[in-house]
Image (cartoon, helix red, strand yellow):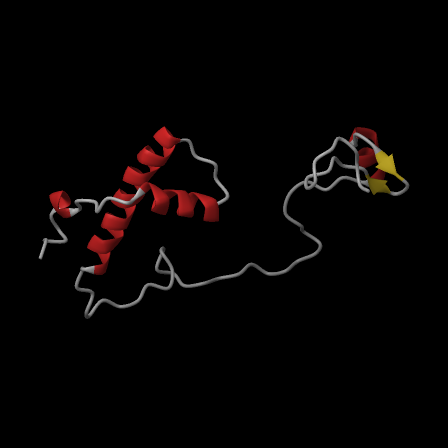
Length: 118
């Protein structure tokens, strides 16, 4: 069995082009042949590293709940002091690209097209 501490022991098991294309399809990616081969090698390397991590003996290691070791904290929810910059409605309407009544008109994000809200 390879030593998980040995950086040379992460030999990647090759992935077939069909497996790479299936993963690309699931991720909604369109790959050419050269990209499929390259991404196949990259994906195989990632999977080999994950296999190395799975082989580590973690018995006696306490689960980590926060990377800083301080635990989870939350700020007070103070509506009087919101984060970021606030603009009054007059300032906002002067810098907005377009208005529709009392609302900002913004470009579509989904569905394409140049128009604002439908």
